[in-house]
Each structure stands twice: as C-alpha cells, then as structure tokens.
Amino acid sequence: MPLPFLTADRAFDATDDVALPFDDHDHWRRPYRPGPWRVVAAALLLLLASFVLLAAMIIAFAGALSGAGVCLAVAAAVIAAALRLLRMGAWVSRHGVRRVGLLLTKTVPWDRATAVRTVQQPVRWLGLPRTVQGQALVVVRRQGEPIQLLTDHNADFLSRGEAFDRAADAVEAWGDEYRGA
Picture (cartoon, rainbow, N blue to C red):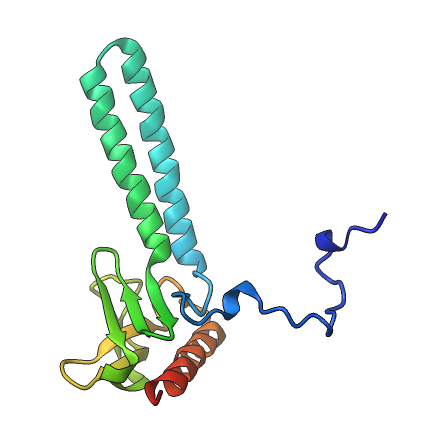
C-alpha cells in the first residue's frame, strides 16, 4: 500500500490547481526561515524554563507554595520570551511590512513606504552593541526615519549570505508588488 504523504520526493501533480495555504497574501508571513542562532537561543531558553518548572514542582512538593508560584511566573516569562524570540523578524502581507522585535512591533503600510532596498551600513552583530560593516534591508517611509528590517549579521542570517539575499529579494518583491497597488 503506497503512502505518498510520507514521501518528500513524490512527483508534483500539475493537475492540482488548489492554492497552497501560504498563497493567501492577506495573512502575515515571514518570507524566510528563522536562523540557527535564533532557534538555538530559543531552545536554550526553553531548556532553562524546563529546569525552572522542575524547581517549581520540587518547591511545591516541599510545601512552599508561594515560592512555587514565583518559579511558575518566572518560567512563564522565560517561555514567553523564547516564543517572542522565535517570532522576531520581518513579516509581510498585502497590507504592509512589519518588523517584530523582542518588545516592540512596527508596521508600515505599503502606501506609506516609498522604497524597500538593501543598503551597506554598520549593523549590529547578533543584536549586540558591537557594530560591523554589513548589509541591511530597510524600508524607507514617506514620513519618519527608515526602519531596518533585516541585517546580514542578525540571528537569522549570520554566516548565511545567500539566505539573506533570498529574503531581501522576497521582501523587495512584495514591496514592488503592493506599493503601487
């Protein structure tokens, strides 16, 4: 009995004209995968949260419920930070471009953006205060300063120049398609 859903190398059936789930341009999507540095950092945070939850369980069994509650709150905060860390990056849709940071999200509608382009400038290395010369994808707004969406030295693209180029091209293509509409 063949199980075609289990094989990744099955032939694409050209008669299927069903739109794929990611073809809906009204939903916000990240046009690239999270980088290994970001995934490793989130995994380490989740590992830390598991140890804190284990500590909360031990403290609860020892009878100090207030201490267990504090540990549960700390674990919830660490889990929320790990999930937000995975969500960080540039997101696009038909409505605009969104830069999701750890604490702040900025959205620029396409009609307020004049250009989306890659520029050479000093960029932060892995989000730390140290800056190095690199490339950044910026969205230039009609009013206000440009917003830096991606850099080639952030947690998604460090040592992955080709991935940065593909992601920048994808975001620029979205901008070209929807800025004029």
